[in-house]
Length: 380
Image 1 (cartoon, rainbow, N blue to C red):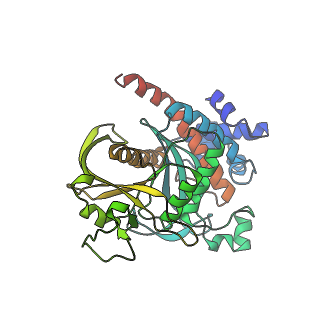
Image 2: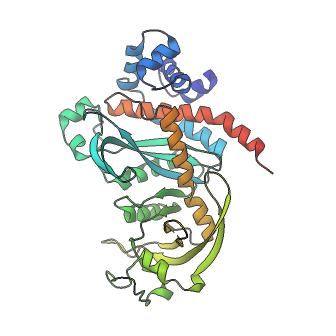
Image 3: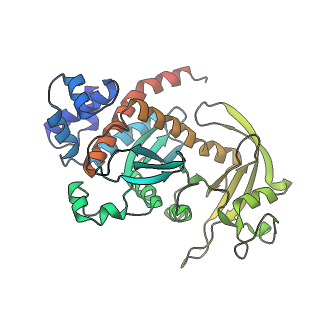
């Protein structure tokens, strides 16, 4: 573990910072139960040094980006990622003093809860997905109040922004680290501004596969432009809801596909629909990028729809890459249960980022040996 820590924390300028980073890493890996600063200090060092550790996490101004780029380099080599998965995680909180805390309606919970929302970028392969970059979603209540900003150590450059922009920021940042490119994958069914994100990624030249809501309005391909589906009103010329295109597709767009799921690797078969579409034109832009809409028919489960700008790949590959979201969801559960993802007790912006960076480091270290063992067991 010492060699791993020396490598990943080499960008920290002071020896005491590197030492405390290794202590915190050991606490996240070896501690039991809640991974608070006090418990890490007591269980790892067996000394009353929680104040020094708390200072390192919450007040020390070390730059987490250098640590994250080193983690990403190792994960890239270990996983040979098939996808860069964007995923949100809800972090319940009591009170309203911790940075980013708001009372929000959380679709996965089906109710409003007091929480932080963290957005992570995971490098995902067949054996695991590991978070290499993070953002905390902030509202104007946090960024427009100078007293709140000062108390939470929010940098002057940080402002409230749309949810989709956090994802775009991470894609741009991880791209600058020289990590192997892979399609950006995620679930945009509850993301405001999904079309803006897809348009911007296409403009950047980034491939993507996103699950989208069935009510998303798209422009059908030329051979479907005159089709009237009869399944609901059209909002404008050639603008049709995705679910209506799925229902109205003829046999030439239907196929039976087999793909490997993102978690257990087992092959599955289902009937799918694939057809060319475009996103509606945004104000001031010429038409949206050419896309492929892939949908699976309802067979004992919900209808699922994906949009991708990878128009030259088969539907099975699109569905398989979309399933990497499930791979990431399983890893997020493990991070929450065993690696302290929910356990940060500080209130500062820098403290949150420091903690999440060290959680990523701990998960990377833990996965190294298990991934090696899994590869040995895989059939050739």
